[in-house]
Image (cartoon, rainbow, N blue to C red; front, side, top):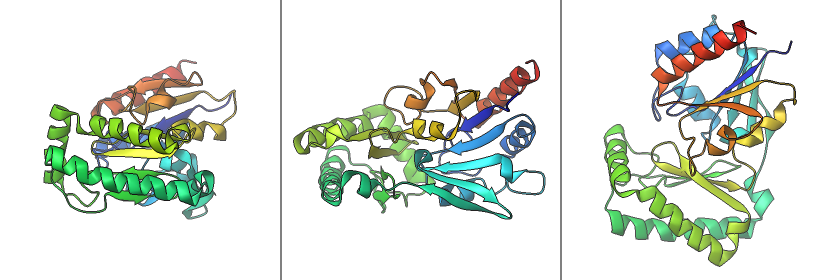
Length: 261
């Protein structure tokens, strides 16, 4: 019988948003690897994954059993010998053309100024992060500290800032024709992911065969969230989590299921 596959979102699932992996998650992953193949499937780039999961990689772990599936799985890293190696990569600009990419960036720059005036949220830097296969647009800036992130999260919860931004993005996309080729979704707790249609997290499923049992655990599983498409995919058994502590409980449930087969 084939071993199952368990795919995990990163921020809000295995770790706090942009935070380090708790020890209790590390212990659960070490136990889970005995029963399943594991994939860390995130909108974040590889560097963020390794930074946030730095406590995970030691002699207790079979790294060959864990795939790093960065940027919604459009960049896949596999363990080869003593390190992770990029084995598959996709390019957003090549997919949508340089002109459309530049139109998108210009639209986001104009929208940023409008949203700052309207909602008065804190600012740092690195608002538009191009990750090769997707754009991560963070209104407060990816350089923000924990205090700024918390302030923005509270404002976003109250005023639905990112939902308002996505509504504006939709209008701009319709004007330029980008709505026909791009998808956008809430990423983490402060940003929006933008990528070519079909390059959501279901992209990673092409790495597995039809007879694989595939579980997915994520925290943004509602419409508009960046876990939504894979969570509802009929090929996947989806679990929605509220954070690392709930993720530990889900891992225990999956292990019990597999032991009872």
